[in-house]
Image (cartoon, rainbow, N blue to C red; front, side):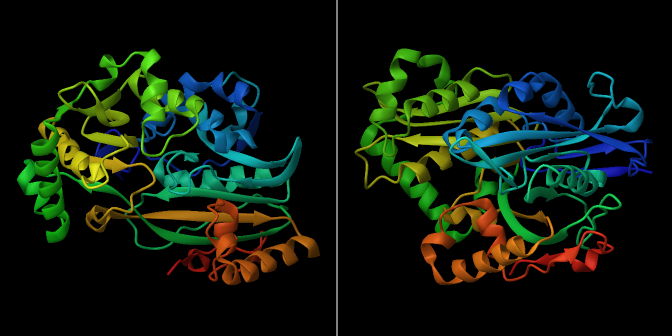
Length: 410
C-alpha cells in the first residue's frame, strides 16, 4: 500500500511516497517530556532529521529563533516526544521517534500557569509526525501536556487527502474534556514552468500590480535583485539596516532572523539593492528541492509610493520559477491580494481541558467577552483565538472522538 503525502508549507518535496511500508497507529507508546529551550535545542539535529523523514523538512529549521523569539521568551517551551513503548529508556534516535509536539506554556512573571498553546497557528511547526498518524500523535502529546497543566491547544496541518474531518483517540482513563475545529489555511502558491504562466494563475488586479510596481521601482531607483544578498552583508551592517527599515524590531530579533536564514543549511537571504548600495528589501527563508519557504521580509523606510512588498514578490516569484521551484510558501500567510490564489489547506485545532467549574466558566467567559471586545478578539493570542470560536463543543475525553464531532470554522 502506498501513502502519498501532499506537500505542505514545510515540506521539501511536493509528493513523498512510502512504498511498501504501511504506517499504522502505534499500539504501545511512551511520551517523554523535555522542558526548556536548552534541553530542546540539545536535540535540534535529531529533530531536523526526523522532520525531514516525515516530509516536514523546514518545520524544525530556525528552532532557536522559535524558542528565543520575544514572543517565546514570555513562555516556557515544552517538547513532548512520542516513542515506541519498548524504547522508553533508550537514547532518542530518528528510528525510535514516532512523533513530537512543541508547545509553549504561558507564564505570569516566573510562574508557569499550566496553559499550553501552539506557537504556530498555521499548524506547521507544532506537530511533527507522518501524516497518517499526525492526529494520533497530537492527541497523545496533548493528553500528556494536560497532566502538567489545566488547558492545552495543539494545532497541526492535516495533509490527508480524505475530505472527512480528523478523528482522535485519547488514552484511557484520561479525565477532562476535548474540543476541536478545522480551519482553512492559505499560505502556498503553486508555481508554473514560466513566470508569465504563473502570473496567469493570479487574479487580474494582482498580476497587474505585480508588473506595475516592479517596473516602476526599477525605473525610478535602478534597483537589481540580488539572490545571495546574505553574503554581501556584514554583521556590522545589521543594526543600520534594522533602524532604517519601515518597521524596526528589536536588534536581537533582527540579528536572529537574518542569521537563521543566511547561515543555516538550505537557507537564503534575497535582496533588492539600488545602484548606490542601499538595500531596499531583504527577505529570508529556506529552500530544498522544489519547495521554498519565505520566512520574513524587511523593507526600507522612505518609499511610501513604491509598494516595495508587491514589487519584491514579483522578483521573488520570477527567481523561484527560474530555479524550478514548484511551491512558494509564505510563513504565516499574507494579507496581500496574492493569497486569493493560494492553495487551500486544512489546519486542525485540538483543545483539551481539565474538569472543574472554574475552567468551564473560563472557556465560556473568553468566548462571551471576545465577541464583545475587539481588543481581546484581535490581540493575536492563539489560545484566546481558539476559545473565541462559536463552533466549540466540549465533550468528555472518555467520549469516542468521532470524526463527525470535529467542526469546521466558518
